[in-house]
Length: 222
Ligand code: G16
Ligand code: MG
Image 1: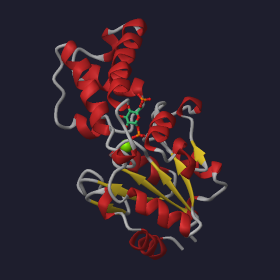
Image 2 (image 1 turned 30 degrees about the vertical axis):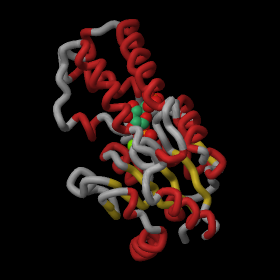
Image 3 (image 1 turned 90 degrees about the vertical axis):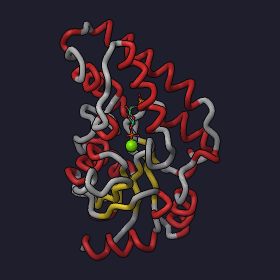
Image 4 (image 1 turned 90 degrees about the horizontal axis):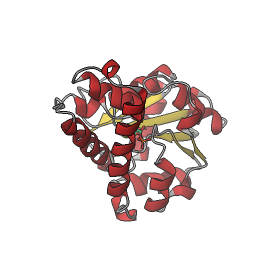
């Protein structure tokens, strides 16, 4: 029986994935690296450090940079990102999400955030929805990033639920891989080809309907 919903944040609750990508693009440009279109999905859901390594590997290679140089580049990216998210307001919650949260709470479902972002609590506060979630995983406490299942298993545990009692939402292939490795039902938001491993894919958050999701979950999870 469905008892909880686990949400990625960037690209699912708010359209902050474009701010991450823009900030990383600036870092890449400063190093003379051009990011290929595939970086758009590859960077989503990855930790700050893993994202930087990915970018450097599109150029001379992550092993050509010292730990100090990498820390400075990551800090530069986060400074740019913080400037971008400073402008966020409740109007930046993605379409369909407020209704989904309302419907989920009316149905008695528990809600949790499984975001790789250390900035997630600040973003939720700016969006005015922090109190909707009974658990927010702290990514600083994790050993492994997405696509490892750890973050989704942690979110499920914080709610006291089992894998067959939750539905998890992701916009990234690494995130969908993490959900599936956790043994949970995955809803992918975006390109059905990129997110083919998800149990259900919708093109945008505006298409997220609790009744449809629950019906698909009940068909697949016994
Ligand atoms: C998000 C983004 C990633 C970002 C990561 C870490 O994960 O999708 O692009 O690199 O958080 O963010 P920060 O640098 O703010 O700690 P998610 O899981 O919310 O999609
Ligand atoms: Mg995401």
